[in-house]
Length: 597
Image (cartoon, rainbow, N blue to C red; front, side):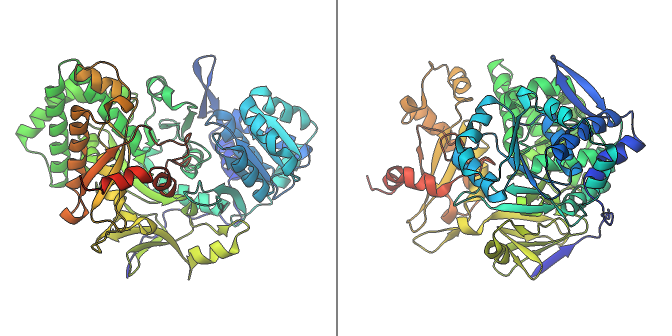
């Protein structure tokens, strides 16, 4: 076994909890803008003092209607200002937040609210409220419902108008660092979601150590972050809490389609996203350059950025490369940075591998993407690349104060103050996941001599071919998926003679591809056997095959008519493939790949 650990950069205060953050900020930085919210088409700043006032109003309302310390209060909403406000209000009332994805079905909502025993829920829209109402007769503990778009905050403020500040102080002092702050239900690729118990101390240790390790990215009064990931996902909560710990200014975007416009308006210094976001920025910019007849210049600029970044790892780029880089900085890179708001120097990426090539590309244009790794059970990023010691292609070193271990079978094990206390109402699953103080992630990985972790796949997703070859699909899937035409990809081949894959086409990029190839508009169903499309997908497959041995390489592929999405049941809310569902529904397509012609 190989272990690696780092000393803590931040110590969780004894008896402290997350409600302390908004109170500290109001005392120490009362006039500093800690949040910016979109009102009537304009970003308007909210100071630390003003934010605390709003948090207290909502907390008093919760207390007034009877929410008790330790009670569970659910929030079902898109990412928005009110979500963060409610989170801190719930903690100030001594209660526990239960996030619910706004895309959740009635059955999922019933399970999460019922299993957690939620006594109240705040929804956002009429449709969210209708979903809750459709299962309310099966939720005996649910006593209160409010809706953000129908004045939830005003209702809470009115209800709590007679509750004193002293009552809030008393309530918020009840939870300690060991108390549960939130129960986050894993989206689950199989079976019912499990509720991860995350404590106040988990979040404080996680975010406190990230901020302390990278102070240059979290400068109070200067830095800002735009959050567009779901707050129902633990990564979104990490952004919210890290921003409060620093503190830096936080903005929210509800619709992913608005991100490009809001980056230009909000102009963050730090962006947090998933690889697909950064892939799309690159692919869109390249496609635009090709459409404008500047595709060759863009490709030269990209190659120069990658070479420049790689040279940084070797010491310093030579003079010819520096001159070439300076020219492309004026022609290309500055425009790409402007598309990201113009002020952002760094991004933090998680959820899946970004890929070495894109990592070097972004650093080469002056926008460094720092990859990290974590799970809901580890309260988000349990490893990350520090801004001053990055190893592109890895997910970084363990969080300061924690340890990573590679078991004999290659599984990544984790230990530290950020690791959850167990699954809500599920002692059996807890015992399986936590052994001798270590959390078994289910992921496979390696640690280098400097403690940088590389994730190579999932234990349960390992494919064993008929010839006995073990194949981790994630490596090649991530490489193939990076191609602009590819929506999703799933490698198959368990107990089969060779590796193959199912491919979906990115419906947003397809019209651009048709235009670039001087083709009329057409649907994927009409193009599945089109020679040009097949050749383009083969290019993506060939690129993916470069990352693996011949025995692991994809030999055949099939293009599906439909994309994989959460809406059609093939992706979880956190965008993980439901492999068993795909295999069941597309069994005929898989079988066809192995039929001799």
